Length: 119
Length: 112
Image (cartoon, rainbow over the protein chains, first blue to last red):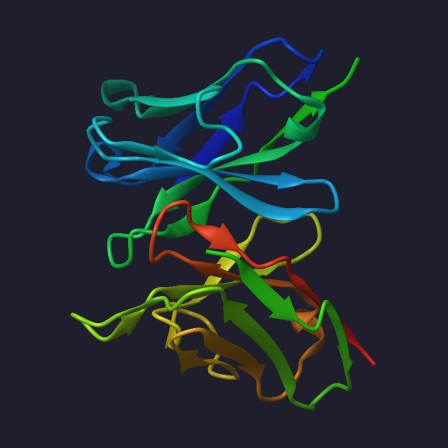
């Protein structure tokens, strides 16, 4: 069955960096686009980024453009999110999400990993 | 594209109809294929969101038929025809017409 397991969440100070990982299994990862979505406390869902199946095309949300970088390692079935210059408002649960082949949007969600940015 | 849901919270009696609205700041209808790029998600406490409906009205596999989506262009509705206890959750609409894909602020559905 499809599994997405995020890791790397931690408590970090503002201005620092963090790298999240997402281990995928149960589907052909190398053929599937992937998304990152976050859920800030009390603020609902915010779409972060989508990366194409081959990693060559990436789109970002406005609030993370220039600070966050999505990437993937297809032989290792792993998705990454490099987060630099972290801000307090980046605090939240970060979800790795499989893209739907029918629509291109978010379809199957991992359980998420918690990132807390605090001094 | 800004997505606005109404109401922010809703309390409905078991077995009654629940209706959640979603409005987009610009049309999400792609005229070349006549499809509305609009999805609905359900999020229960402590769980990740679950896709319910895509193309505004197509139920995802396994979603009960009491869940229905309707609307076109900029105005959309999620209807639960007969509320069950397990439907208590947060509900989000999302447009995927253009990046950045954006979500509504969410509607909290409770039992009256």
